[in-house]
Length: 299
Image (cartoon, rainbow, N blue to C red; front, side, top):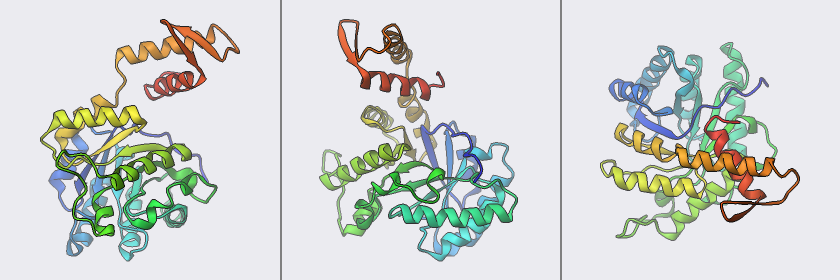
């Protein structure tokens, strides 16, 4: 297996239907870190063959293919194989696997990708993977598996969650209350995704906000989930990209504080606790500061 390629920024992932050249073009031209062309839910069964061709052509013509990803159909479907056979020759940056139900699904996808990479002269391991890990009832019990030792693990770089497909799996007619807050089951799905991603050492990506015109609420939510540990968020409209990018980009004050934390520990080698600005900081504060600086491109 070749070395895993450099990871893209993953603050914003903008969906675009794979059967719309116009919307895919807008997604690619946007400020989204990843333009995510969809071959699953937003494309009807009868349109999938044409959409595969359109997605492949869009990627092949691009000068920034590393940030063009494709949401394929679930691994249990024949559409999945057809999707991969059509798009991998165009060399997308990665594939987004919906309805993943544990590490075995990543391994199966890894085998498909390895065969297609080899057949098309693509360095083995070049195609990265993100997985939607809470979309079925069975998936909810397996979010910890992604941290294990299994074939294809090195491809996995992000995990996300979803409420719509989970509610369909459960037969639930409502996901959120009148106040807009997710019911306990869906908050649990969010938490399991975050914990599973952290255990696996990959980025946790927040699910979509369907109310795409309420950008103030979107940014508030994005800042909240970032504070909880998420590293990015899915978007369904180009207008959502800038607020998401802003929410997941450390500001000057955060960066200055992180540098000060790192320096405080550097000034006291071997110390488990240091004082800074009237507060006592221990090693977890150092880890958080180092992570924030790394995400901002600083060592």
